[in-house]
Structure formats: structure tokens, C-alpha cells
Amino acid sequence: MKKNKIIFFILTFIIVYSTTAYGLILHTEKPTIGLALGEGGIRGMVHVGVIKALLDAGYDVDYIAGTSIGSMVGGLYALWKDIDRVENFMLNLNFDKFTKPGTTSLKFQKFGDAPYLTLYFDLLSNKSKTSPLSGLISSIKIRDGLDELTERASIDYDLKIPYKAVATDLISGKKIVIGSGRLSNAIAGSICVPGMFSPLPYGNMYLIDGGIKDPVPVDIVHNMGADIVIAISLRGISENKKIEVDNVISIIERAIFIMVEDRTKEATKGADILIAPKLKVKSLGYNISKKEKLRLIKLGEEKMKEMLPLLEKKFKDLKN
Image 1: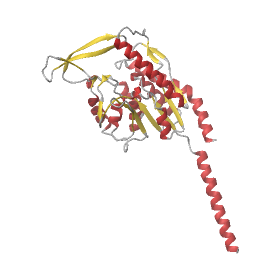
Image 2: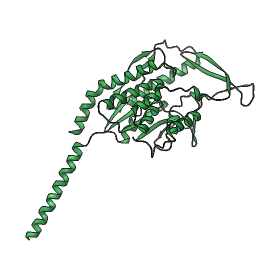
Image 3: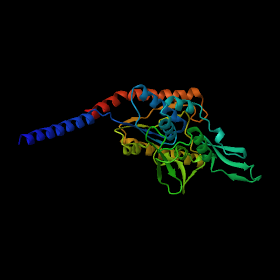
Image 4: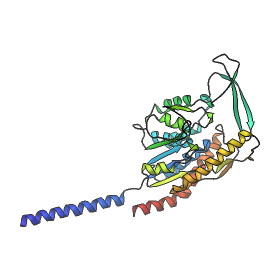
């Protein structure tokens, strides 16, 4: 009988101790942070600044999902986990070497705010007949360049942070979330702005910019398991120019802009923290100066620092 009492006491102690210890582990476990990095072309320099400010404040990035330029910044950081290296790459980013080969006499027409490539002369086939381009920049060359840059990194095996990219299938119109395979495919498919980049062949799909379906992938980061989702929307950064809608192309461009802007507002509703800087700049072309790029990085740092008190509060609330 005495032996049974001793055994009962030991078992009770083990159960109580285990439950208490498990509770303490749950109580002290650090909440996880996920970044939803939005589309926006060269505005994506802001993403670099946001990550820098987070790291400087002592926080880690546990999950990343990116759309378009957000997929590039996020993917490279998930691979290297070195924001200085990502910053250096972005500061020296140059798409000129990825323009389509075998072309000359590129013809541009001014439609509203942006020049649109209309026709080109095919030197490789030695034809004088002009032909329409699917995009000035080759998505295949972009992918191959990213393979060289990342040493054909695999999302499944080589990344240091869980990562997903958002693209759009041009054929079905569906949102495509890429979370496995080569990192180069994920980034190249996500950044293919229609007209500027040729669609990326991917299985039986042709991928174009993910911003058309999900400009800021907050829902994806939540589904990945992040406790706190920080969304970065770049729509508030615009060129200091008058909006012109005086022809078919400029009207279509403006309509797409409005559509993406509305989807951005809807997509960011689920974010725990929203960073949406506003700024007027002279130009948002990829060929802007390093000084202007650094200005955008600084803007990202400043806006993230403004949100640090809110982030700290959310951390404390989750730990209590």
C-alpha cells in the first residue's frame, strides 16, 4: 500500500511538473514575425529599409511572402540572410543586360506617363518585317541571371527563412503561390510586369506579375504561421506628374493601376502592422540614381521605426 502511494506521488509530481514546464515554454516562446512585401517596381527599395530597421531593433524575420519586387527582395534575404548584401545588389540592379537579343531600332511611343515599346526589327532571322514584342525584357534571361546569382538555390533546401512568391497565370488568370522549386523561377515569374517583361513559361502556365491578383500577400504570411504580420504597401509612392488619360494605352494603364490599388486596400486589411509610406518623387524608373534609391531605403527605415512601439506592444500582448 505504501509502495502504491509512493508511485502515485511520483506520477502526480511528473504530471504537474510537465504541465507547468510546458506552460512556461508556451508563455516564454517568442512570437514570430512575417513580412508581406508588396509590389511596386523600384519602390521596393523601401523593403530593404524596413528589414534593416527591424534587424537593428533586435527583431528576427521568421516568414516572408513577396509579390513582384517584394518577391525579389524577400527571396534574396531568405537565401542570404544578409540585408547588406541584398541592399548592395538592389543598389546596382540593372535590367539592361536582360533586354532581348537580336533587336535593333527599338521604337518607342509616348503614351501618357510612360513610353511603350511597340515594334522591333529581328536581326536573327534577317527579316525586315517588324514584329510585336511580348516584352522588352526576357523573363528567361532574368531567370538564368538569378540562377547564376543564387547558384540555382532551392526554396525547399537552401533558404534560411520560409518563403513564398506570388505570380499570376496569364492563361487561367489564377493566383499562383510558389513555395518550392528553384528560387529563380519564383522571383522571375512574380516580377514579370506585362509589356515590360515577357511572360515566364512555367509548366503549362505563363507567369506574369503577381500584383495583378495579390499586391501585398498578407493572407499567405498568415497561412505560413506568423503570429504578427507586417505588410508593406508601396502604392503611396508616386511620380510627381500630372496623370494623363488621353489615349487608349494610358487609359488601360490607369485602369490597371486603380484595380491594383483597390486590391491592395483589400489585401492589407488583415495585417497586424501596415507600413504604407507616402512620397512624391521625380521618377520611378529602374534607372534612377543610387541617391534616389538610398532615399527610398531611408524612407523604409524611418517608417518601420515609427511602428516599433506598436510592434513591441503586440509582442508583449502575445507573450502575456
